[in-house]
Amino acid sequence: MDLELGGKVVLVTGGSDGLGAAVARRLVREGARVALCARGAERLEATATALRAEGGDVLAVQADVSKAWEVEHFVDAAHARWGRVDALVNNAGTASARPFSSVTDAEWETDLQLKLFAAVRASRHVLPHLSESGGGSIVNVLSIGAKSPGAQSTPSSVSRAAGMALTKALSKELGAKNIRVNAVLVGIIESGQWVRRAQELGKSVESFQAEMARNAGIPLGRVGRAEEFADVVAFLLSPRGGYISGAAINVDGGLSGAV
Ligand SMILES: NC(=O)c1ccc[n+]([C@@H]2O[C@H](COP(=O)([O-])OP(=O)(O)OC[C@H]3O[C@@H](n4cnc5c(N)ncnc54)[C@H](OP(=O)(O)O)[C@@H]3O)[C@@H](O)[C@H]2O)c1
Image 1 (tube, rainbow, N blue to C red):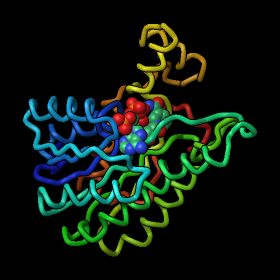
Image 2 (image 1 turned 45 degrees about the vertical axis):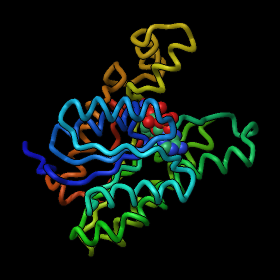
Image 3 (image 1 turned 90 degrees about the vertical axis):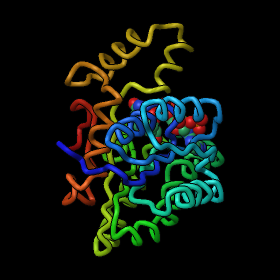
Image 4 (image 1 turned 180 degrees about the vertical axis):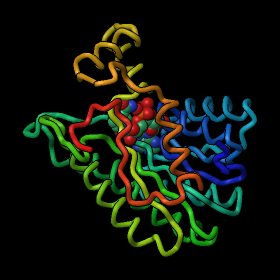
């Protein structure tokens, strides 16, 4: 299936590792022009260099999306480079689920800045560019905790539920401008964060992931592959997903208790 993403300009926050990098790679293979941002310069450049070696037209911008001016700089840099923006993937994030009584106000604030306000600001800042392009697509990467929060899942599940409300509200508001807004709710999918966790625990990535899948009771019996996630995001960004807006799609091997 031709996703008709050739030449489109797509911004991916948190694109230097894990799921964001997998999305960037999928988009490059579709011929899209891709801007990535992340905090760490070294990994960001390494990912961008690898994507360029695969033929990608890739811009890497060092930015912490939890800081307003850095998000805006990321969007501005992409627009300055290509003169247009067609799509945005709000992906940057990190795991942060702890017992409620141990989460301080400062930690709540940090989580909301990273997972909610970054998406608010990036979406607001790309809007004029998407309108100029005659429409566009925004994908918010959330977690299955957004629909179905578990015990000890704050502050993340609360930030993610807000991200789902943002998705739905924006889809209603921006539909008339031909801008689609969707969310992808992740269960457990292989990524840099799990590689680092396995290393911290002194386990092989394979055995750690198999253990996570067993303990979580994932119906498909395994964690997801980053490419499986990237396929869904690329489809939602593309004209092939042109009638999907305001949806929150679980990509979780059946794990979530909520449809
Ligand atoms: N993988 C899963 O099983 C899973 C489950 C539920 C939800 N998710 C969500 O899916 C998204 C991607 O996660 P992942 O598993 O791919 O994580 P990952 O492997 O740790 O990659 C995270 C990416 O985001 C970047 N990043 C983190 N904080 C950032 C910030 N403040 N500003 C800019 N970039 C930032 C990281 O680069 P730097 O550190 O250099 O900034 C990296 O490129 C996250 O929102 C995560 O919460 C993932």
